[in-house]
Image 1 (tube, each protein chain N blue to C red):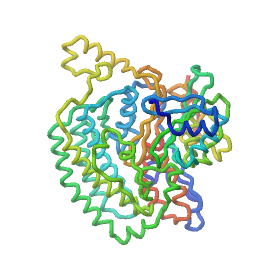
Image 2: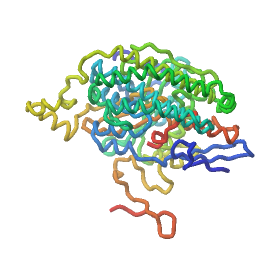
Image 3: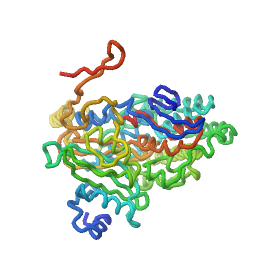
Image 4: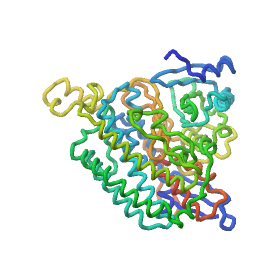
Length: 383
Length: 170
């Protein structure tokens, strides 16, 4: 019997795993979660729709923009809002930058767990560039709350645009650096090939999504199969692995980073001048100059800021593809300005359930590689 | 939307009268079934060769205290990884009522049911282990029920002789 965590660097947060061992072979795995439980679902019931957005940032703190997007899309579905083209493109660009950023953190820490010390330095160097872009665009590095109901908070400036374009030029070279360090590295291959195998049927039955599922060769990416935010207009293929082991998960994520760069390039081409918010005075706060000059705008501003906008009665489930898998928001509205119930289906929570299947029968040293390869984020698991 | 969801037609064919209500809104389809029918409905949806709802996206409880006859509603979000369709399956559950577990069909229901149990106090029958998942073991009450206060009922303080003590909030 061995306790791994909750304060163990390779659990990527506060996860405790009870391991039953026979010599060095793992017989039983029991994960214990909840050390980071903040009751986000309960909090959300007591806030207006707009006030919930910062809470979603704090779900998966390594990919905040994607969480914003999932929530906002669900609310927009309830409201029946049509988001302007420009905002949709900005959202996709931000979502893909977030995906790269999240994969970089994953790669740095995962590789560090297994024993390669240098890649994390390179990964965080590039991640910093993305965080600089976020700061430029949204004003915050980590919890930007940039994507808002109806559009985005502030237009994408030309400086930020140039910076993103510059990043798409330099980043592919850096991916090559990582690959030089790892892809053919015999130690890396020994530690990862054939470790933590799972078949596609098992993975689906266990509720696994994202790169962990795609590494088994199963073709399912919500961006492609159930597109949202205009993903249907972009050219890309679903990236697949073959064996469903730790090594394939690494390869899938590396390829996804390359693909994200391609998607950002396509997005920058699609970026045309235009409005970023729809013309919906009851939902979208008016611009400041108008509030000062026009009584109608002043009233709307006061109403939206004090009691929040009202959302029609009903219920929706909106799922999006985050760097970790399917993130779903189930929102029940009773017609008021606060959600009646928000249920958040987080990918890490479901992926962690597969840990037992993945680790059973493997050696003790492999559990670190397996936990790392699933790319769990405890903020998201515990909600 | 006039076109019926294929799953509803199949269900009506196999078990006439099982679908109590159909809700189509916002481009999504939801059906309401009785708690007693839940097991056979899920089994059919999962095993039918054309529907193949093989993926349980989410399971959530909703507390309708004072708004509906039966207090809770269980909501299953089903997804087919073959046809890429979604279906929302709902069933009403009263207080102190038991619901059959779906872990036999989708293993992913395991933690979802545990979470549902700790947040709403809904019992799942023959679930292997309904231990608390996100809150600590000594936690009292079901936090996502509407009558549970936002600040909580009690807080933990470190005891004098080590260990933890609960202090009730006024």
